[in-house]
Image (cartoon, rainbow, N blue to C red):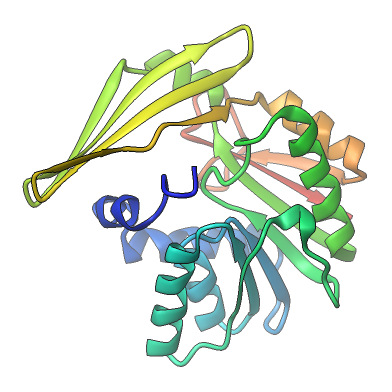
Length: 239
């Protein structure tokens, strides 16, 4: 799992996770979380710092945490190139103690749902505890209903004659999507399978309420009200 979103994934994802897209997503985050300059933002599952670095560039204090040191190394490198002061941590979120509370916490671009349900619920409780009173949490996840409606058996992404191939197998009884990811880079084949829980809006909302969050709202990736046909499923809640 740790290798699934490392260098090879980052290499291929640059085809669609462009800087323009990142800027639009950060503008949406600012709006939905009512961020003010100087707010301290916790980016959980920050990866290579795509969102963290842009938010820091906009004047927010940012702490990013991820389990992939390779991805964090790239995040740190890019932050230094832009003279950005960001705290990056290579730790398991559940095992991390914070010296201060955050104004906002993010779980952006499907960074949630890779553990069993009980651990996912613990993560939400930990996120709640990490926030100041009145702090906001935002989670961006796959819209399960739309995903299953259009789910192919496989997908192929090509870049410069190299390929990332995903094979999908959804298990409805468990609500889990099994993904067998293959990379063909410079003629070499590697494979990194992973599983992700495809959650409904109602499930995430109930888990957030159980963790203590209130005023939970749902949106699509344009900040409009969430619907069954939304490309993404975004929920916000307040401590």
